[in-house]
Image (tube, rainbow, N blue to C red; front, side, top):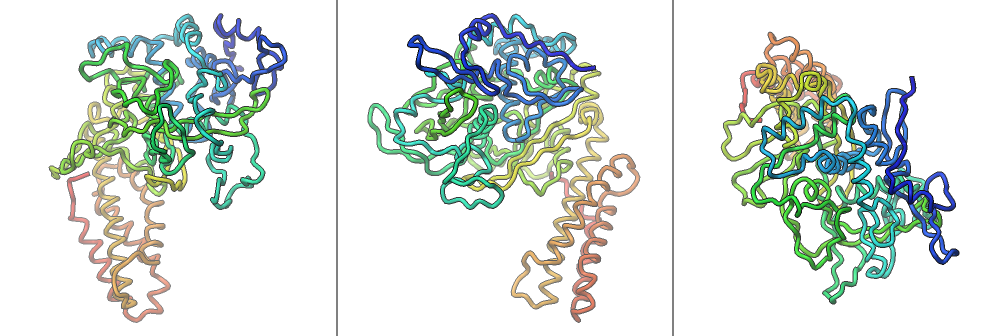
Length: 549
């Protein structure tokens, strides 16, 4: 049976729709009072711009339809993981607004009770509140005065545009080489407006640092050509996912736990005019500023005549000031108590070579079980208040992982995505034995991997008389054999508690090293003793059980 979506926009959008002229597949053009001039439009509230998954497949919907039908939509299906991660944050901020769960003076018990009641509501969000909120704000990508998530001042403050290839991630721009893209700077191709919106989100959350277009400010200020990196650049995000998009958005919310915040001071970018670059940064408040208002990039999209495509972009810095620190609620936080307060907490970096199961214990354990008093690991804040969920919600809760493997400045390696099975019944609050077993198996796997790497490098050094132990063919090959086999062993050890985890992973590491060196063992006279010593070290690691995570 095909899912039927409610597509009727709110009254304000219906009135605006009557003014549209030249409607196309991707955008709309609006006639002005002069009659001849046509203004391009792409209203995210009504235009298909967000890809979602339902029981019958995937479909592009406008923001209004996504919110209205969240209870029958399974999840987001945006194909770019960093764009999906940014969209989760944006939708979570809107969800807090339309549910009233953004009030800082609500007691924690009352907040949790209210969210539990909403999770059990079969009809989703209140349509009247959605209509009111959509009508109160501008969602048009090309609005003259309030383009969505953009700064219209760039058109007059920047001497030139940056090029459409600068906007679209994966395309070569400037002097970058075109390794995996048919696009070139000499023949730039327009981007569909809904895809430009996805790339706009990536810039706001994962944008690079470095040089950018000159921005002439009023009053005059020294030229400033430096971008600061996006607030979650190079990190991996963990998003709680329920049975429907409606459940997932409610699970993304975190109760306010600070002090002194006033509800009327928290603003999302679409709820206020863009701040001037001279303006000192405001406090990072929950949820609007924290989830959607920490961008360090200012962008302005240049549309084609009807708004169906974006042909160019202005890109410059958003502020001359250092942004205030803030902890993102969907990242694992590492704390180093030896560092100053402003540098003490750092989010876990994205690593395309690191499988998701190695992060499970950081999500499931309430705190860091470590004997090291200088460092600790903290689960994402969004997971701190999921223990009193209704049972049907809790037993189906999964985690969507979105990572963007980047360096802190300009280099982008790759992005990736993963989805866990339902895991929340294993949380320490519900099943401490399983949570502890998961942590033990993860520690064993990583300890043996580190020992495998060091012993293989040392054996290679002894065999070849290399000046020092360094990453070598043996260690790379052995680890390439070890990690794919480590994951099924990990899940087996979670089900079967009898085997010793360190012993099991030691056997796996020994097998990997023997396989990786089988051919060289026949050609290098000194390889035998060196490898025998390496294998002995791996066996001895079975009794080395570090307690830190």
